[in-house]
Length: 92
Picture (cartoon, rainbow, N blue to C red):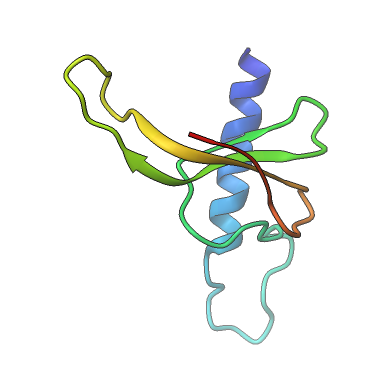
């Protein structure tokens, strides 16, 4: 469980760094990562073997008296770590 949490934190940091604009210098820094998806997502999880990234997108908050806070109806998508088209796996 700790390995997944660590991998998720590292992945989130890499995705954040990939989206940052480099400082205006003559040489752009290298090794910031590869953008794999454009747009807001609610959560990102790597597969155990690192061959895919799963994320929640197009989330709509669902509010009801019996549901916990931040309950949402989302689309689950999967994309390769190198990028490409994200496959829609589930919606709900």
